[in-house]
Length: 308
Image (cartoon, rainbow, N blue to C red):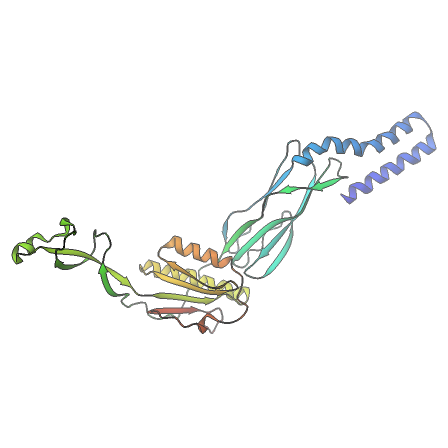
């Protein structure tokens, strides 16, 4: 906009010199036209400037390293006048921010949530001499998900997770059953008729389900960007391995928001927990290892080369 103002001032100065030197009607007409042109431009631009709206669009999640340029969508009641803005990108996980120009790609080299917002959006008149603040949509967040990182040294997963059995609520199908005497209120569909005929008592086949033992994954959400890529990538890989073995588990994390836990029973729970980790702030001090937890199997995720 500064460049257009300089061009206009040069044009105005040229018309003044032309009128002073020529002193004819055409010089006067040119001078009046140049003087009135900004007012005319502002009047015909105001409807477009007052109804203009700028929206920032990004996909909700992308893999780490993918090149992503934010999309800006401009809407107005009239033909688009000139506009300008910058893009402010903030990463809570890494406690840093970037100022980008329109068309610059987002910094997706490391995992984490990127909170994107428009910086100083302005809309100008058609000549680019006047400007007004531009109404824009609220900020948007892009989750940069890490690549899974294989865990080489982990304790054996070959153990019995069912330390006890309990009656399955509501009955239904189950691989294991327990025989007991019929009690009033039991479903007649679960009566073992052949065994009842032999014993003379009503014997019930009660479906049983395992009481799962606690499996725990723990991590401190701190370190360099490379260490955080490794930690969250290991959580992603190890969690998928546990789910493939039909093992439910708990993720426990120490971040700037304190200690949080997520109970994972399926892939959707796992993805949701990983996404929430990407949006947290780093832990400033302490370690989750300082808090003792009882579990049948637990693993602490470390980001350094010598951590296990």
